[in-house]
Image 1 (cartoon, rainbow, N blue to C red):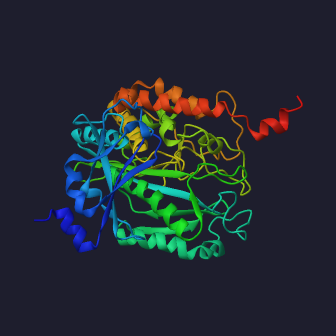
Image 2: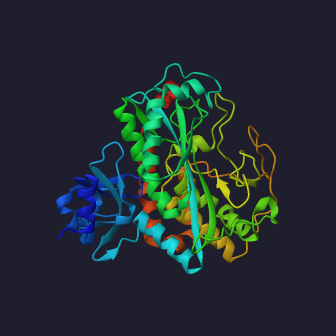
Image 3: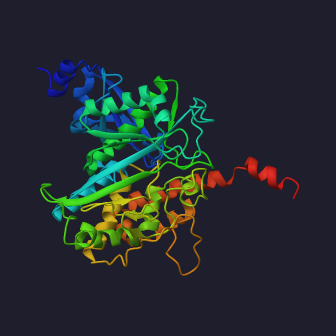
Length: 435
């Protein structure tokens, strides 16, 4: 007798399954399993060598097993004979402590023990480039202020609607698509969900956008700052805390300032207190800091924060409160880790709740183009090593996320930084060859 998963495969015409996990650098890894063999993989997992991915392992470590989460199954809209499943990593019959999806699930379980459920949504921005990545794909997309450009959007109608149709088919409830602030840049939005579902969808969306772009002869990139003169890719995180059964939004209070409850403000304060350390996961690449501290772009704005501050409906601060019952963290960029980002934000926020932290006064000033001086608002980290040092000094995140995760992450990211610093760039040769 066929298993329920094999029966589903026959019913839907699925012939292969992608069993996928995300490593510490946010890279999606997978094995392609024929439907006839899927029964063997669900209980035991697909085998991997951990050292071959960005995980802090050695060639001497035993096999790593990716056990698929059947509830995460997504049939590829553009290749329906294949289904994707997010997997949890195990080794020696125990969950791998440094595996990002395991870390998020543990953080959500701790929140659940307190009676909380985190609900999130992400705004994924990406560029559509020529296949070699050298320039935006649409030569006619050249306005100084291209945001919401109707013509540029409709010239990419076939691709954008193919991705949106895929999300509709998957039941994600997408609700708007637009051309963003940079030439060649787009954003697609779908409805919020529990944090694990959103994280899985975040991983899959990036894979779907890249795959469908390739089918159209283009290249999609979520790189934080691919062009120095254009606005970078953000990945703004919208969040609220609900009761365990998701019956009541605990951030919502119409009598509270801007419609937020006192619990929401203590959570927000916790995020602000740990913001430099959170940057290690929301802004995890060397290139991320080209976006955070960028000078004004061709459009006249960077749309990225530089300070640890919060405001009402004001996009020049790190945290924006656009309406009652939620807030938007504008810190993350396109490279933000889909699992470690919400795990870190949730852990920091709950520390704020636990210690009844105060976020201080709301700032409603326009920080766009402002030159900050000593004594002004605290600044965000200026480089990847700055954020890694903040993470290493954060007792809150190290305890919540675990030593295995934080130590491994810092080690591998510093190794990445050291590889970068050994490179001699074209800029250096141009400006200092004759010094």
